[in-house]
Length: 264
Image 1: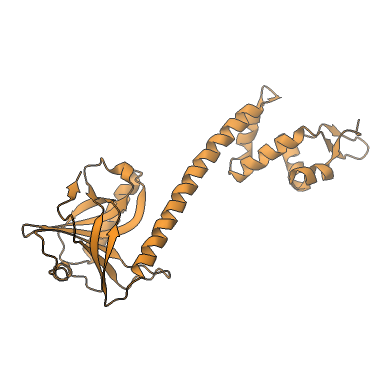
Image 2 (image 1 turned 30 degrees about the vertical axis):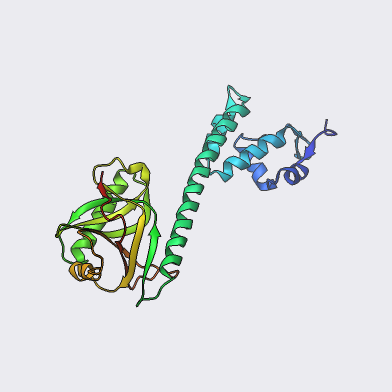
């Protein structure tokens, strides 16, 4: 009987499951040995059970509760690999999607920090910036004060309640058109939310960028008096560095295609 079976130690080496885990899986009825020696109480497994052990480990890595694995694996006291495999594939695909989104976020954040670090506090520099979408709310403050931060916090809470996919950029967007100034507290969201009423689209284009410690919006706008246009878009964002301290803001003013402000 035991000649074609694996001892619990051999089974552990083949599957990567510790002996302690295998005993636990046995105790909850998830992976029971095919034979237990009545004299020694040694557990024995067959080769086919290695596949189930591997499936269990995959489910553990995916944080699927063992009770859920057991409910999937056993239908009418019979082992059903199909349910476990299909559910494992579903969770794996969801994780891959999330990992890809996380990687994209990290790449964009790194690109942003390295761009901001590429010029010093007394410089101004032009950059071609990509298209972005911002979730917004009207702002009537004259500077970035306590009321601004309270409004920003409420806006974030509103976005969380709607399950918006929020990107890293946030701050204030100012539009100056025909000498009329409108301000918005804003944070960047994924393009998938572009159909929302209060999402503003900023087209890709060339921006003049500066760094400042100034909190007053009028003074920030004066920094771009050199930009000769009757339609200006100015974006104020935290000026992060790799240590994530933020002693300044980066302010950006569109210098080409200035009439491309779109409120969806």
